[in-house]
Amino acid sequence: MTALAAGVPQLAISNGLDQHVNARRVTAAGAGADLRGHLAGTDAIRTAAAGLLGSAEARASAGRLREQIDRNPSPAELAAALERLAAGAVPSHGGGR
Image (cartoon, rainbow, N blue to C red; front, top):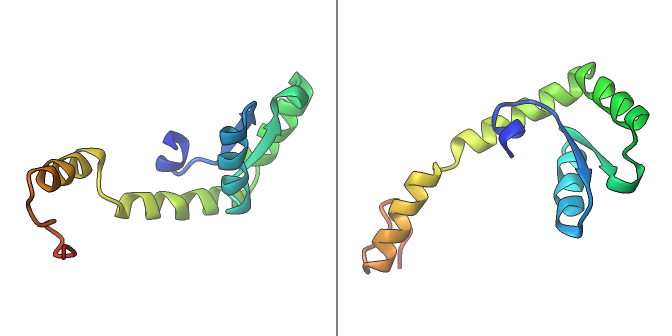
């Protein structure tokens, strides 16, 4: 997520199911590529990284995801909202029941 928050395409080298699921979502959004860990040799990594770095489409997609991430509340804002909820307060965005 850090790469996407910076608007940089992400090359994921996934080894576990959760990593692969996340990498597939980034790849489907056009903002990255996924290499399975057992296939991630030096040449494959070099080729995938060069492809991402040279791709205007991947950079544009990563930029769009960055914009989406920027519209989300920060971790500090979420923590404060959770503290208010735990204390029984109504969410500040007015969406409470």
